[in-house]
Image 1 (spheres, rainbow, N blue to C red):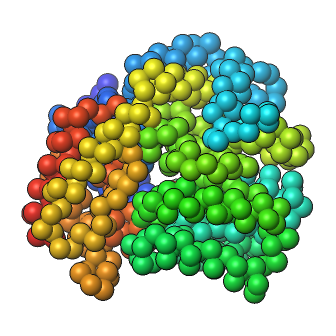
Image 2: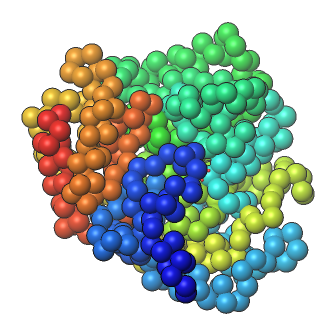
Length: 436
Ligand SMILES: Cc1ncc(COP(=O)(O)O)c(C=O)c1O
């Protein structure tokens, strides 16, 4: 390599400036390699990655079994297009993933449609709901995030930046509040307010027999890592059944053992009609999909949805290895156990920090909401401060919440007890440093 090329490759700040600002950034780190819960930079620094690449690397970075499966399939064919041939990892995944349908009816055969990104799977779910019910309306929840494609952003309300200046958006979308116990007077009041808002919607703006589907996150993700009251999804199921509405659950962030169950809706007994998956499905390779009963899935006519890359062979091989790792390493049980340890630790280190309005979470989906005492006015400045101080302590975290007022903690599920404690101590020190 000539000197110019070497200089160019090592002038990271010049190279970084070539990436458009559209990619809102958390850090300027340039990665040399990543494995398990750790990222190593080109400068030789090691960071504990409690972002999991926004909830993707549930099996950790570069799990050896996933890497081996990827390498093996890559050598046998990278792109074996779905409309043209069947490939073995795809066939295997179509057999195995429907067996994971949450709270499944034992007499119902389930099926799978594969695509590439979370947003793309949302599009599939909404198109399926509309075509199957022949109804035009989708009811989504305030604070929800479902992606940035034209249809998905119309269903997203976690922050106006996802919608601003892109109007007109897809029509036929109505929003009701997501039950947010901290900000709606506790579990019972939050649930009652949400269900009343649905009644009000049906009485004023959208006739229930025009509604194709509810679209809901079982744990609110980008909107603030809000765990809804236990009765929420079952109550939604009842309303859906009453009016012939489908229930589509967006498990893009909460699925694949993240919350201590394979899918987060399994914390309830509600059976969804459509399950939307991405992120953790293939440990980092681009893959997404929806699960639904075969009879429902078959309502999408051949060719009416799809794409060149959907169900890529290498991504499917990664997904199969991911399922094996989740099972063989007991990652759902581990997420629950380590999640409890994480939440206990966080509750301990936030003691005395008046601006911590709540520590909450389910499994390894944990959060600290920062707000003014009494008024609960969101404090994104404090959340940002925690992230900066954590970064200085070599811990990577994210924020979430409409105002960015929530510190979001998403460790890989293969992380160790010691690493959880390390993370908790760093967060405690970060809170001390900003005087929250
Ligand atoms: C719950 C949820 N749904 C959908 C999406 C969109 O997924 P993608 O970014 O892969 O399009 C995300 C991404 O963060 C998400 O968290």
